[in-house]
Amino acid sequence: MAEIIVAPHAGFCFGVKRAINIAERVSREKKDKNIWSMGPLIHNPQEVERLRKKGIRVWESEKELNEGDTIIIRSHGIPPQKEGELKERGLRVVDATCPYVKAVHQAVEKLVGEGYYVLIVGEKDHPEVIGTVGYLKKAGGEGMVVESKEDLEKIRGVEKVGIVAQTTQNEQFFKEVVGEIALWAKEVKVINTICNATSERQEDVYELAPKVDLMLIVGGKNSGNTRRLYEISRSLNPRSYHVETAEELREDWFANAETVGITAGASTPDWIIDEVKKRVEEILR
Ligand code: F3S
Image 1: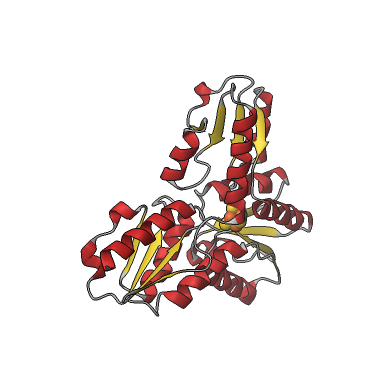
Image 2: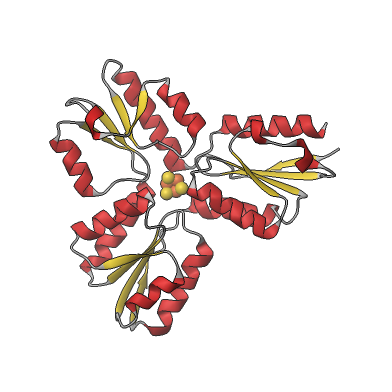
């Protein structure tokens, strides 16, 4: 009998759960008003659709907003300048930024206040990082986003370097950046802002992927943290697959598989993980 092991930390993290609870509460209170989330509330199309049915629509274009509409800032946060603009337009802004993301903003402000050049280790185009860069600008600081080790060449010679990370950053890369900077900067201050939810999910994969015949990573294709789990998994187990839903599972993947590991990104709802697990059970039966 084949064994299916679901990773202990698979699925929604605290910040996403919180943002969805806030949005659902707003939708119960404001039935007659337009409710928007600034971008998808989470990187999971199926869950976004479930929320749409509750009246929480994804805001895509400025034109659709009317005075008095409610707009929810998702867990990634937004630049403070943008938040100010929304309020000026007469919108009711509900802030569902994850407290751990808020902690990155505060860390950046602190480092700027202490005179550090700030490195944000993360993806330049990620909404969370765009928000954090907004706080760097607001604080009047200097700094840059680091995506690869090559980026570090640009700041050789800077003496006081402060380092933070995008909350979902890969720990290994963060370590490499810190190690590299420590070799030549005169003073380095590191505030590790990687959120536990990320490291716990990554540790699950390091633990599980080498032990099983086949590994499934469940989550939105546009979810950065899910993709990273998949990359880690594939580096440890070539039979790793990234799926959004149970329908994407292919029976031929499971040939001779005795053990199947399942994990999911921080934006994957439990009901999707359950569907995947059920489908795997059917295939293996
Ligand atoms: Fe927050 Fe961490 Fe989730 S930063 S949104 S709890 S991945």
